[in-house]
Length: 166
Image (cartoon, rainbow, N blue to C red; front, side, top):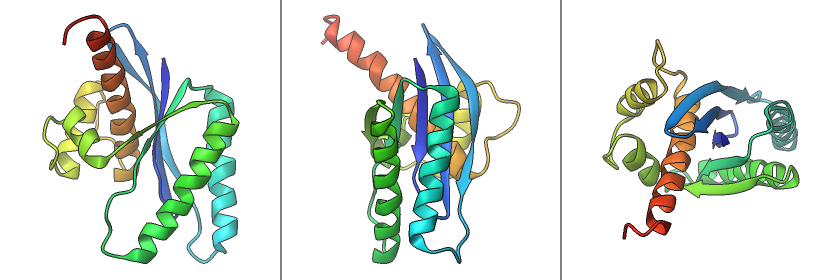
């Protein structure tokens, strides 16, 4: 299963592609989609759509795992992230991908084992799980990889549960 993890944002959207084969998880690619701060919001959303669509077209993932919005102190930030998230979900859906959504708490619990883990702890665990030589950076890309890992763990737990271990 090839999983595209996405950490939505307007200025920076993180993405991470991992391949889950049997009990192994392998890194395929990760990075960010960036937009210019002075561009019109409609242009920024189009750029996000185009770049995510390009990633989907090239790598052909089986599923897109996307982080859900959590509470922000700044309402403007919530709105712009929600717009980006909507465009990303639409792009993935139009490509025929299954879409899974996870809260930041679920991602941290799945990857680190602690729902209030900090960014550094998440990066260290992503590095360890994917056998990377260096910490994944920037944070947005590391978070996207963590979201993808969370999806793989979630699928594995669902299989165990369906198999009768309740």
